[in-house]
Structures are given as structure tokens and as C-alpha cells.
Amino acid sequence: MRLAHPYVPPLWRESRIGFELAVLMRSRVWRGEAVAPGDNQPVLLVSGLLAGDRSLNLMAGWLKRTGHRPCRAGIAANVDCSQRAAERLERRLESLAEDSGQKVAIIGQSRGGSFARVLAVRRPDLVSGIVTLGSPLKHQLPVHPLVLGSVYAIGALGTAGFDGLMRHSCLWGDCCSDYREHFAAPFPPGVGFVSIYSRSDGIVKWRACLDPAAEQVEVRASHLGMAVNADVYRALAESLEGLRAAEAAQAPTKTRPRRHLHLAA
Image (cartoon, rainbow, N blue to C red; front, side):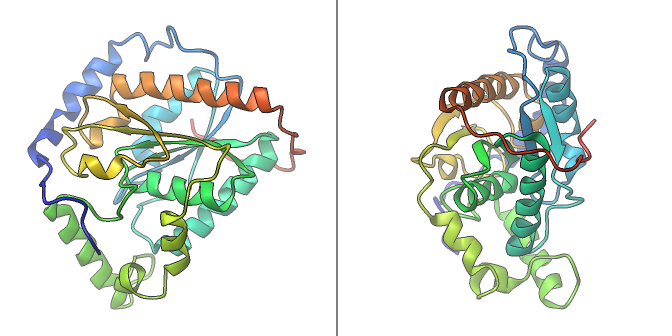
């Protein structure tokens, strides 16, 4: 698997996450000031590598307080085979679109943003747009060597037969060939795409976040801190508002609600 650039991210900068959280708690955006009402906009949240739904609980609570409709991806730890995980997320996306009667916005952090891009390529009929947070979009593994070592270790365990883990064949074999094809496919027209990135990201090489199909928004944030960073939340509010405006202009046909889905608190 080719890496994007020999530059090694400054992993030590990830220690800023506590400071970022403190700044967010004191910010106007956290209090919902100057944030347009979400109008019950459905938003699917997809966590990053080694993380699960709980890592985005704070963001989900903020989205709910500002009038959006956040939904968990149903991920305990994002370490599964990409193909299997994408298929489960697609079913989740279908359920949320049917339940809400609207196209869905997807927010994905890190690996979750890679999944968001694949879902948009596969189901542009269900996705209003995606917002990725520090996500590798040009290559799958442009990450710090320590993180890359963890990926290989997980792949070794999965290859050895442990359930629920990615395997080496996911990266280089036939297992995830469809996923890799969709990951690299041209982004569909009419679907919004915002990539939020930080040059001081300590885990993902920031140049890999610069998908030419995306509107690129630079923030000052650590990689893990993108889930609790005030600048990121301001960018999210603007991006989601833009997706709602675009959907209103297109006047999409509503899907008949069918069942209730468990939403994030």
C-alpha cells in the first residue's frame, strides 16, 4: 500500500486534546450561538480507527441540541474488514433515510471519513453530502508509523482467524476489492463534500486529506481532538447548513418513513 508522503506526523501534538475540549466548552458554538437550526437534518456519525460510537457522543449531543438528528453508526471499535463494515453502514444509511424521509449527511472522523466517501459513491441517492474530519482520502494508510504498526498487528490477528478484525487480504487481496474501487472512484456530482483537515494532525498526513473533489477547510486541531474542537464544530455547522440549503434548492422527493431508528443521545 503506497503512502502519500515521507513526512511523519507530529504524534506528540495529540496531547492537546484536553486543551481543545476546554476551549470548546467555553465557546459560543458549543452553546449553539450563531448556529443555524438543524431542522431535524439526519446525520450519520462514523468514528475513526480503533474508536467507536462513544468517541463521537459529545458531537452527537451538540448536534441534537442544535436541532439535528444524529444517528450512531453501530460501531463498537472501527477495526473490522472494510467491505463488511461498509455493507453494514450502507444498511444503516438506508434505514436512516427511510425513517427520516430525507437524504442523509454523513460526518466521518479519520477512517470514518473514508467510509463516508465510499457510501457517497455507492449511494448518492441517499446521501446529501459528507463532511470528513482528518480523513485519509487519497490513500488508505498515510498515517504515523506507530499507527501503521497497529494496523498491521490487527491485520495479523484477523488473518489468524479472530472474528471482527480486518485481515491482510483486506489491504492487498480480493477481500475488499469493491471497497477499494469505490474509495478511489470519482466523487458523484450533486453530493456535497467537505474535507476538514489540520496541518498539525499528529496521526494522518494532512496532504492525504486534500481530495480534489472536496471543499477543503483547514483548522488548527489535533487528529483525535477533531471530535472536540471548536473550530471544527464551527466548520461542521456551516457545512451542514450548506447541505440543507442545497437540498432545499433541489427539492428532493421525500421517502416515506418506515421504522424508528435508535438515535444518539
